[in-house]
Image (cartoon, rainbow, N blue to C red):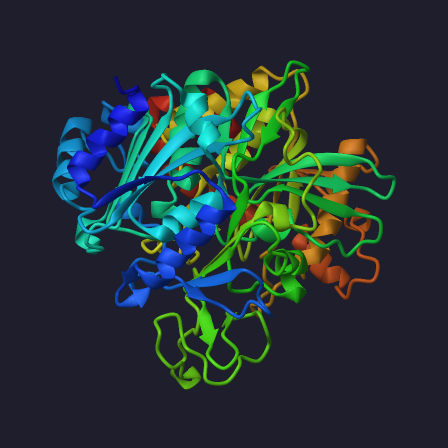
Amino acid sequence: MTNPLEKWVEEQARLAMPDRVYWCNGSEEEARKIIDIGINKEQIEGHPVFQKLNHKLWPNSYFHRSHHDDVARTEQVTFVCHPERELSGPTNNWQEPKKAIAMLKGLSKGCMKGRTMYVLPYMMGHPDSPYSKACIQLTDISYVAANMRIMTRMGKNVIDKIGESDNFVKGFHSLGDLDKNHRFVMHFPQDNLVWSIGSGYGGNALLGKKCFSLRIASYLGFIEGWLAEHMVIFGLENPKGEIKYIAAAFPSACGKTNLAMLQSALPGYKVWTVGDDIAWLNAGTDGRLYAINPESGFFCVAPGTSMDTNANMVRTIKNNKYFPTIYTNVALNPKTNEPWWEGYTKTPPKNLIDWLGNKWDKSKGERAAHPNSRITVSAYNAPTLSKEFDNPKGVPISAIIFGGRRSSLIPLVVESFDWAHGVFTGARTGSEGTAAATDVKKALRRDPMAMLPFCGYNMGDYFKHWIGMGERLARPPRIFSVNWFRKDKAGKFLWPGFGENIRVLNWILDRLDGNVKARETPIGYVPYPNDLNIEGLKISKSDIDELCEVDIRQWDGEVKDIKAFFKQFGKHLPNEFNEEIAKLEK
């Protein structure tokens, strides 16, 4: 008699009709075989799924080129299918679950003919953590199987952990025919199910990532009393050797990985990486907030990554002792068989092959690497990996930071008045568009807690859940907002960013330790310019003053936009937000 896991896999196999079903065990030997299959037996648009790179210069590294119109998250075909539309909320696409399942079954019938169905058993979180979740993903492409082994803790022990239980997260994925008109990424929170067809891109196909770790997990957290967040987690060590842990939320492609792996420009300060994208936050028995990173790898944006901007990430991708590193949609130097992307070197190599496989012509003004090209690499390769990375209990969070990409108005750093005000600050966060999603306009959009594309239920209830979490904590973290991207009238960035961001983190540490005062403004506490450590930094006093400026006269339009955004949540909006808006208007 089959158990619930075997029964589910058999049912999906009857629907998808693969030539072969292979249960992965997560071993290194298996990983090499899967990469080899991608090199020799599987193709996308006539290209092998994987191409071996120069292993002398880029150890254990491989290149992948996706379908030409399958290069980023596709929010317009991403659905959250609760039984009632209101539970999905106004910011999610919705379909009635039975109709959605019927449509998906129609699209998925025979979708794996001629292919292998890989069964991927994986844990999100350390296997010994009380916060971890056991998951199964099915896929028909070696690229997803190889990436999931890097990004999650995959192995047969997960099957043993599930045993006879039906309490596991289910993920069905198939490339289908890669027709964008047949592309859907659908979530069924009540059934712990994600169903994705028609895409091979990471955010749509690596179902343990945004699909489960955020959309499904955020709803689980709502029901079970914890938070699943689009946040980095890092330890900030001061010159005395004291470490405080910080969680920070930024929209995709706004510098999360750079912050999580920051190389400090201030002597004596160090950053220790716990996670670069996702945090699961739970209330500890001591009344503090604890965070784990459910992932075990990084899926980071390649363009802009260099020794100047993120030296620790470059060291990570060159340190392949444990897992392969996979480069997706970057450019190739055919002479040396090396990957390349804009920003990696100041001068591009000659005769590059662009991400589409064509000879690159710089004069046409097109990029050699896709703006959303990616690097998948194991966290265990990182020289900055925190010694607490595998701590089943997680790390205690002293501060939460919200940030976005704003060229004006928003100061360099602001501390919130209290927990409710901090939640309001995170909820009103706006950011200018990036290349991480294909269908997002480049204009400003509200992106609360950087979770707008990832919240798996009504976002008004999500805000209430945040308020409630603070009430459960005896010692809640202090909440800050930052903006590295403010520009002057000539369009030049006022703040140097990257490793210099440690100076802002230093001020946050000083606030946590009670070492500095701050200036009260209608939006929170901002630094006195003299309290920011800018020693050795080439920046004018006027620029610092502008970075810390809060000109409330310019906030009329901002407040109107915030109110218009919140209006869509109606009765689901927390009363605390109406109070905060009234204070800000006054």
